[in-house]
Length: 250
Length: 270
Ligand SMILES: Nc1ncnc2c1ncn2[C@@H]1O[C@H](COP(=O)(O)OP(=O)(O)OP(=O)(O)O)[C@@H](O)[C@H]1O
Ligand SMILES: [Mg+2]
Picture 1 (cartoon, helix red, strand yellow):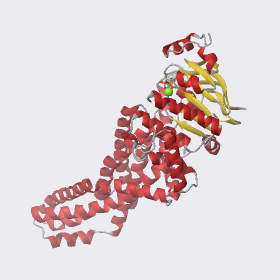
Picture 2 (cartoon, chains in turn yellow, purple):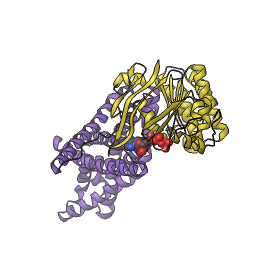
Picture 3 (cartoon, protein in one colour):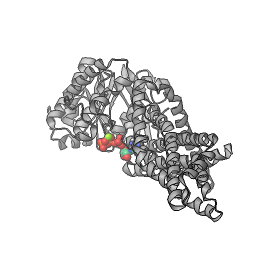
Picture 4 (tube, chains in turn red, brown):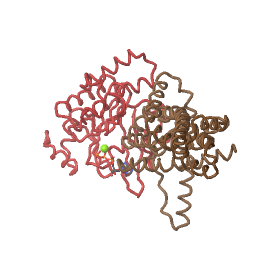
């Protein structure tokens, strides 16, 4: 059963700029699906279609049995409640400290007691390596720390599907591997479906079940990590070579 | 209500007529949207008594009212002084400078109190509100709220609206009091009107109706300032430049709305 399905999705912005061009693919339940590709090719735009922050110009996006690109009102709320979303910009609320930011979805959307919330928040912050920073305000954190706080907020509700927009950008290699491990662990332990947008192929090859290469609005290939790293598609090769990854089996 | 939205893709206008048509439709749609934000926020007031909402309203009240006291005080006092001086000079021609108090009181209660507090709060609190909401919009924080299924209108606009609906009338009353006192000072020192005469005349002319009309106006101004500022904030695009633009537009629209609505409310009651 596919969890997320793009059906001939085309997206044009004002001025006729075509960012997605007849894109179709399916993401299965429990998968870690990674989208890579050059900057500005519509990776973030793809993620935004999955939660209807953007609506396709034509085509449909399905989440399970729901057509998210045509849902509205209560239906849309219900579909969105299945998601956690890590924004490329982290998008933390500036006037709340990290703890309150992470607690926000729990406070607003569940009936948990403050104590249960505090426990969950502490666990989420621990998972992203931010315990002890709970009282800090977003403006006082580094970019990478904000990113991790955003990640904690995305996963604290234990959603079915988590969309990660560049979870490891701006992080040191050690923390990057830790975040990769966290993503892998969440999907293994809780069966979370993950969609990861990243420029970090090392991490992508290590944790993904499949990797999609997006370039100029088109999906060039969707391959499991081992065949992706042996890919002969020029765009994929350029990507792999730039990060010093040699075809292993070839 | 849904706040994040995409600009509609319109066909390139084939001529000036179609361009005017497109602009007109867009203008009406945007006005409707601002009105919807206002109504949705009023409807969301039913959540105003939840503990967290209450705390947020109190916090906003502090920002809107308490923090504005210094600037409102200075403006109010000087408006009273200017009014007394202007009117007093004219009245002295007819040897009626004793009536300065009545004139100051009447104009403060009905017009200048709500008007000046409205303008001051629009320029300070309203501008800050537009800038903050605008920054949140370009930072995708509003989108983040919406996908967490947290209604930005209930979460952000409603507490501000509740706070301003209380703060503007309060500040308006305060402006009236300080204005009348400022007028007294000028009447006494510049026009040699005895304190007692000034205040007796002032109180004789202090009508309850004028007070209520003034407070009602101020109440409306509170709604206008929050609606306009949040609406402008929500439609911000293009980063920091856009935030600057949203702030400027919110101040201009607020000033115009306060002027126009103020006039019509007076017309309605007198
Ligand atoms: N709301 C929008 N309005 C107009 N154009 C947009 C909008 N959002 C994105 N675009 C355009 O779509 C293209 C793809 O943007 P997107 O953010 O998906 O890139 P990306 O693949 O995520 O790149 P990066 O790796 O740098 O994050 C860009 O050219 C961008 O200018
Ligand atoms: Mg992106």
